[in-house]
Amino acid sequence: MTAPQIIAHRGASRERPENSLAAFRRAAELGADAVELDVHRTADGVIVVHHDPVLADGRPITDVTSARLDPLRVRGEPIPTLAAVIDAVGDRLGLYCELKGRDTAAGTLALLRRPGAARERSAVHAFDHRLIAEARRTAADVPRGVLEVSYPVEPLAAAVAVDARDLWRHWEYVDEELVTAAHAAGKRVIAWTVNDPGVMTRFAAIGVDGLCTDDVALARTTLAR
Image: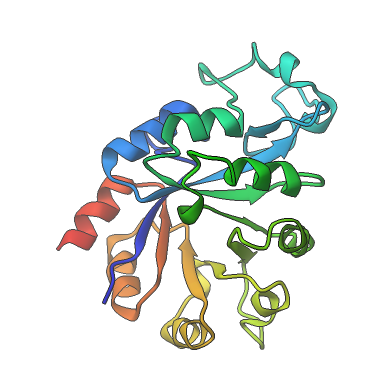
């Protein structure tokens, strides 16, 4: 059985500021296979990486130009553009981009399709499944995923509706029955956010395809046992 991918949640977020270039570079050093990150679109159309839709001063990212973001820092680190992340680690890590808000799909997909972006190892996902439907229309060749924090009666319905490859499910709602059903439908299960070694071991045994974790070093050590 293939070991699950180790996906660094917002980079190596326990050692470096989340969603920063430092966190992504550190994730690569620790042996992550990929990173999960959050993307927003600025007022002038630049795709930037930041968790919340608003800045520390309360301004929505959608109302701020990229030039205005340049001097800002999050725990000492700049807010990177997705292009800068691709330049920094795109040849070493897969990039799982969570679309956070309106008009993020087209710009994100264009960047993931450019040379050097590890296109075959990158994808988009979102809680707002309408954004994933838009991604399908915009660039059907880039893999897609749907985020869920529940166990629906029809557990694959959302993924099937937008032809998503990946089902991102909160770890408490992941079990062997789900994994078996997903694999039978040609889909993958990515569990988030998994920080317990016992859960990591159990999920590896039932065939979970990816572990999104805050602790890359723990995941790498656990899966190596």
